Amino acid sequence: MSKDKILVIGASGQIGSVLMQALSKAYGLNNVIATDIREGLHDDLFFEKLNVLDAPRLAEIVEKHAITQIYHLAAILSAKGEEAPLKTWNINMPGLFNVLEVAREKGVAKIFFPSSIAAFGDDIPRQNTPQNAVLKPTTVYGISKVAGELWLQYYYRKYGLDVRSVRFPGIVGYQSEPGGGTTDYAVEIYHKAVLGSTYNCFLAADTRLPMIYMEDAIRGTLELMEAPASALTVRTSYNLAGMSFTPKEAAASIRKHIPDFEIKYEPDARQKIAASWPESIDDHIAREDWGWRPKFDLEAMTQDMIVHLQENYAVLQ
Ligand code: AKB
Image 1 (cartoon, protein in one colour):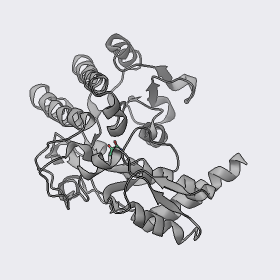
Image 2 (cartoon, rainbow, N blue to C red):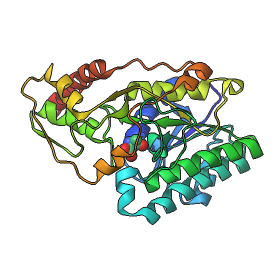
Image 3 (tube, rainbow, N blue to C red):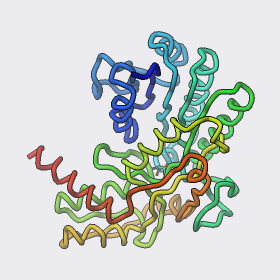
């Protein structure tokens, strides 16, 4: 059994709820503590209510459980962030500072902080966007991710804090629902298809974006966290690729299983955000440094999503 004690902040969110299960399996149920601002989604024994902006409460939890690793997932995403830019900054940045500071002060060994393809913006090659492309994001969420990446590197260089990060593409999974992102359509489309409804897509048919299946995203996160520190050459955030597709291609892939599926396109403000992001990602440094390989392409993901969502909805009937 591992000696690590892991704290997940934002454990009830899209990634957090699935990561909790994977971490509990890998490190033992007693060794993973869920925290979230929302109560009721996790076993009380291993749950602590936490607003990450409350630094003394965070310190109390870290001390109480002798935490050795923190996964800090709580943030406001791209589309929701644009509705309240300063509020988004005032949650995303102080939340990260509280985590970095508590880690430094209490000797937490490792931190995981997700960055995003939202860190990219103007003046990038949109195909195979390289690791070191210029970072000029157009959303407050993206700005907070770029600033966050640089602060991770700062704490690593100045204090030796072992911080690790990936730039996640849109994450697609059947286990949980996203909220407030620009890539959320790629989850919604499968729910509507399985329910037999027409999907009104908020992005245009040919909007190509990088995406990753949840199973790959979780495995990649654990692999990065388990990699030897000496192998890691990026202490801002690693580019990470799974697949890239458009809403039209997703619909075509779904129709191979659900031939009657219909989609309509009604692009809204999220279209502009999507147009500022890469279409595909060059992740060769993650592949070289810690052996990253995605397993799911669009067709494999569609098949798995449909099977699992059909099961989930059948249980609810
Ligand atoms: C979003 O759409 O905001 C997120 C992301 C790509 O970081 N899913």
